[in-house]
Image (cartoon, rainbow, N blue to C red; front, side, top):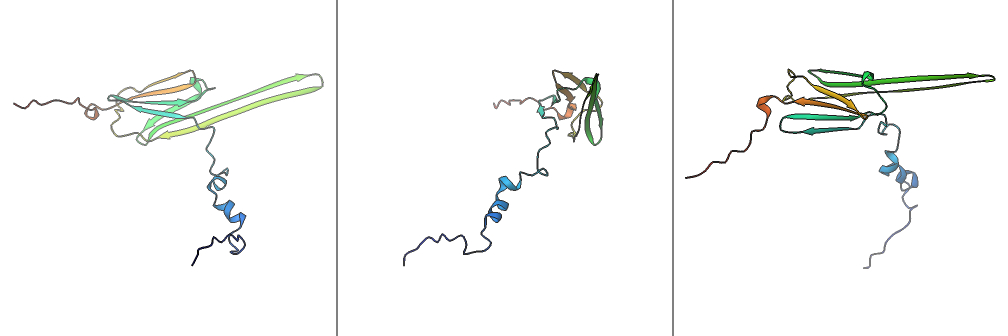
Length: 148
C-alpha cells in the first residue's frame, strides 16, 4: 500500500486562514497589549565582588526630574518632564507641548548594605547607581592549601 500526501485544505472546516493567523505567534503577539513599553528606560545591572552597579538610559531629563527612593521593598525610580511652548503672531497661534514620565522599581538582593551611602550620578543621559554589598556577602579570594 502506498502513502499519498493529502493536500485538501477544505476537508476540515477548522483549517482556515483565520485559524492559521490566530495561531501564528507573530500576529497574535503583535498587539498593543503585548507591546513593549517604548518609554520604559533600558537598564543594565552589573555585579562585582564589592558592589552592584545599575545604569538606566534616560536621555532628555535633568537630575532634578528624578525622584529616587529606597526601602525594604527595593529601589524606586521615577521621572517626569513636561514642556509647553506658545507662539502668537498676527493671524495664527502655535502651541506645542510634550510630556514624558516613567516609573521603575527594582527588588534588591538582601546582601545590599543599606547603611552605607548609595552613590547616584546622572551624566550624558545615563542614571547610574552604585550599591555596596555587606562585608559578609563579599566573595573571599580562593585560598590554596598546600599538601605536605
